[in-house]
Length: 166
Ligand SMILES: NC(=O)c1ccc[n+]([C@@H]2O[C@H](COP(=O)([O-])OP(=O)(O)OC[C@H]3O[C@@H](n4cnc5c(N)ncnc54)[C@H](OP(=O)(O)O)[C@@H]3O)[C@@H](O)[C@H]2O)c1
Image 1 (cartoon, helix red, strand yellow):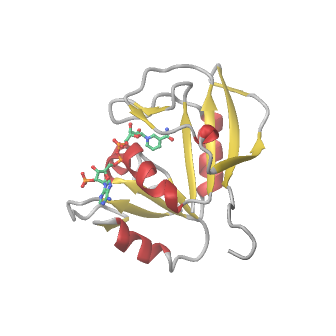
Image 2 (cartoon, helix red, strand yellow):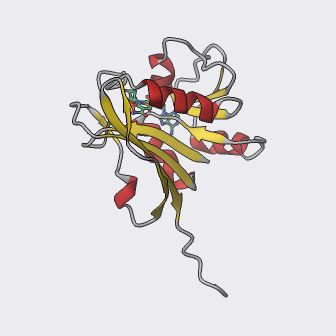
């Protein structure tokens, strides 16, 4: 699975239940990357979208309430979600928010991180994968200007620490 997110200088990803910034280049990248795939999100992120479910993607939502959500398949726990994901053909993206990134990051072997080089004052955060020993940088874009802000797109992959013969 692939984790995809955008964070600011302080690793903030959201505020007041919504995004911290409007970054058209990042939104375009998110849409083009995830179209036709399966996306996993928490109930709060699902409810934060003005248009839901996300079109042209299979929407999987984690929610303990068991409440049905329009256009989405709802899972009450990670075990049942992962059982379903195991049968999915094609790419699966974890698209937020903070609670869901934290719980599903260990299942991901790739992370697509957009970094915004400003501090926006968020209330929801995620770890800086660039500093975590289990991840390594695979690709980095040049600086892109969007909506008067500077961003870069990074791709990290999980390190394969398995030793021969072990
Ligand atoms: N910057 C980015 O790339 C990005 C991407 C997405 C979201 N965001 C932001 O992140 C914020 C939302 O994040 P959040 O951490 O508050 O919420 P969230 O992760 O979107 O959703 C949390 C909800 O998911 C459900 N859930 C979580 N773990 C579960 C589990 N193990 N089993 C069953 N259900 C589970 C629960 O729903 P119930 O309460 O229904 O049980 C929980 O309240 C917003 O500000 C949003 O804009 C940022």
